Length: 484
Image (cartoon, rainbow, N blue to C red; front, side):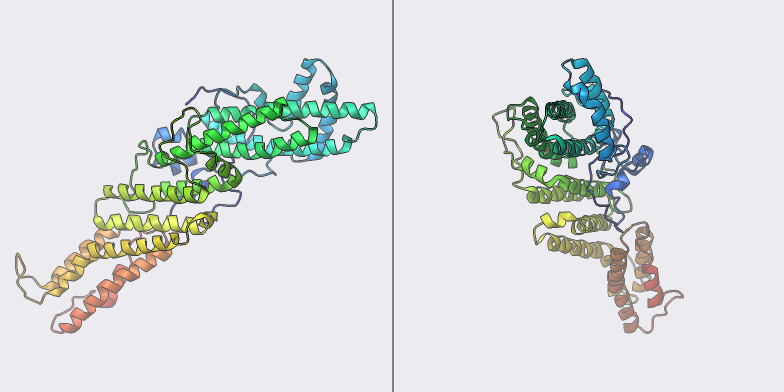
């Protein structure tokens, strides 16, 4: 990480690193992105306890929250800002710089972003501050631009020297405000590559690319105007920084510092909720992301091509990143002790990924066959699970009473009961969080075990069925599976 430049501000709120719509409800047991980033950092740490301390230091606990124009940390009342402007504008008609500097600080402080004047745009923010600062900054810039537009509209046709002077002072205030606000862009660019940096860079790029050209048109700033040149340079820096982060996303998903402590019940891994939420956050600024992906594949500092080229558009990128996440889950499933549990784990996680994709705006970017491929994979996981977990149980019924076993004579029904109890005892600790998937899986297990048991009893009426071992009671026993 780069140097830490502490800034003082009372700005509250949270990071703009999420979509503006609420998190999608899910019954699959995977935590949503908002669940990973509650307001209380202690709750955040509880939710991401699967991750190592080094990873926790990389993620702002207030991240993945939408920008809201009604946030209490920014005065949304344009009239109040216009009243403040009338009092501060005279300072920007003066030749002396000291009165302007004091007035500029007061002006920015009214938007709760006075801290930008204390920033060094060549040094990165402390990472934990990035989310809160970007959120307050984006709201302030949007409100500020509206205030300038209202006042400019009122005085843009001066008929006397006083009006012309006010227009000049207004342009000076706008130029100095815009120049100061760009310092945040430099601090974001100076951050080390990380998932949070990409979201912050996109969230800064979007308002700069809209507000600054608007201010230039409003005040007739030429292309060589200092603020216009600085904003162009800031946008280029943000695009380049974002491109580097995009190339690193596959490595972040595979990050070796993640301990990948596997859920021993086979339930959804916390990384699924985190990354699927993150992919949605990337799309929050679709236009900025498009510019990042279309910016070219060459490295800005070298003549050599990148080792991992960018996807041609956001659709290809999202598809590739989800596939990377799925591949990591498949690899890590080998850490689970039982083959059947590995299939349950992949079934749970594939279902969670599918739900989060089709119930969000990610679905618009996925190929038509994407859903079908995941559904077929889930069917494959179920078949493989049934084979390794219940195939041997049902196979105990293939013999006849008193038939010679490889080791000893054994009643097939007794062997079946023993295998059944062992399987049920083990799998009661396995978990399928989604109620719909859990019910379907129970039905599938019962559909493979109970009919075979019934057929055996029908074929061998001479066999005495122990108490509590009717087909209906066996079905009830299987209905207790996967509760965890």
